Amino acid sequence: MPAARYGHAMGPTILVIEDDDAIAAGLVRVLHSQGYEARRVAAGLPALAAITDAVQLVLLDLGLPDIDGIDVCRRLRGARPDLAIVILTARDAELDIVAGLDAGADDYLVKPFRLPELLARVRAHLRRAVPASGDASPAAVLQVAGVRIDAAARRVHRDEQELTLRPKEFDLLALLAAEAGRVVTRERIMRDVWDTDWMGSTKTLDNHILTLRSKLGDGAISTLRGIGYRLET
Ligand code: CA
Figure: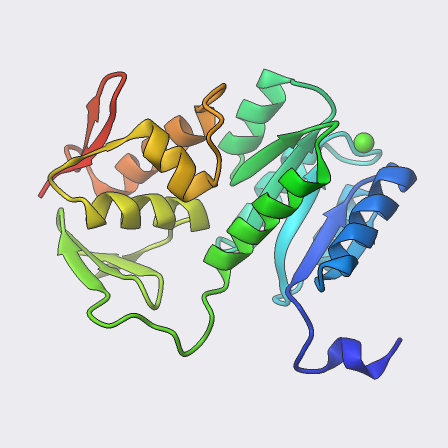
């Protein structure tokens, strides 16, 4: 291993959990080409053992040879609330996707996906998971809807109690808070939080609104049916 791989210039670490050798090799190759540190494991149990604090994002195939990918997802989320988890499904399996999101995944890609799309998602998740140090924006603490949001530290407190938010839940809350009292359309949320114009399925958004509501308390987020959401001041 070249020593440089462990130097300060090392990119974010991504764990690829995929049993298909050809797909895994392609993923690792393209991630390396973009400067990411990428490692691959071919099954679920080794994946659970390979999750260290250095890993910031996982690409998780749901169809694994040893244990259920959904179970892997749930256990990864339990161990690492801050980890970005993107599930890969073999086909447009709505039930797998919903189960994966319920198990704590932040996002999903349906195979076969295009590599530029994969890289766009990876960039978006890592940008949010790892804010560059030293670029904290001023006056980044917002007090709204009974919660205190520290954008630079990516921490949220409610009644002096810190809330554990998944990366995308934080981004969603930050967006709604920036527009508190006003409606934010579903289109804008998909674009700003998920970097996509694709509205074919917004189950990811629905799921995040649901969990955010349970954490913020009743009445914090209003639904404007067919339009969007509003964080109440
Ligand atoms: Ca598989």
